[in-house]
Length: 375
Image (cartoon, rainbow, N blue to C red):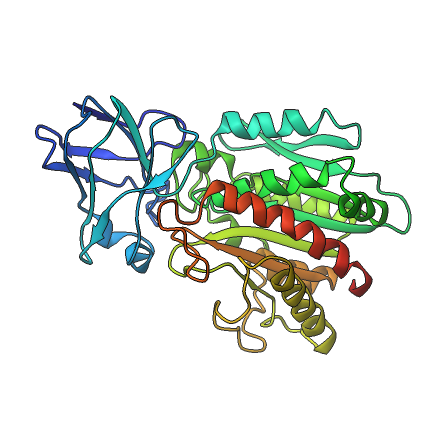
């Protein structure tokens, strides 16, 4: 029996693995040491064996309530992911499973690898309406890639979509895959109309270094990218620095930032209500979009989410949504999806899953098109 995590997005430290009923593990912190929660590891040699895997520092993670009523995901083929029995006592996370295969993978959520990321970009570029631009090199030397879908001709709205600022929130890139598949369907009427009236700028993974390293929240320099927008560093947070520079070059009419939330078992949107210039027009745009999406997808709801920021409390503009709304006077939103299940429409065997993310991404096409007259 062996456990390892020396692969793309792997994260676990093995404390003891002599007996399958007493496997002791530990999550490795992100660079900088401030955050940790993501785990992803392989177990081999335990087929048809009852295993008990204890993550002993689970009570020290960034979002402890993220492990309440949570079930880890597992896969034999790294394609189909399912939930396995998981218990949390406030200190330790215990995963209990009897694998049906010689090799099984466990993770906090279904991973989205660099290979899948590269394939996503390559597949999109087959479409002549898509152009790619490497905005910069990341601290680890990877291409930080933006896709432009459609032509930026006069009169078209400029929509920016960024995903996975927090690398452990892999559901965000699964959302992107579903969004892109429908957007690039040449026979899909809503997508065609959207691209007649708007150009989409898309960064599928804002923090690819952190994703490959197995981080929850930070890039290779230990920076939480969604706290860098007011004053990004060209060397410490180049992913934000160069994306922001490109946004200023193109202009922005709407910005959609795709995330995952550890604790809340719902899909919801957070707005920029705490920014200094928030007004009735911006509130109307935000409410309209949320109501549109709720009417399109039963997986989305508007009743439960983050507490609304008090007026003026987001004046530092460190978060993307706040910076975009204030700087460009545009509709800016953060979509949050669960690591757990959608409590409104539960599917206990799989919980919130890659395909469910993709369906929500596809549904957002309708909401994007229908909000255009309000922008």
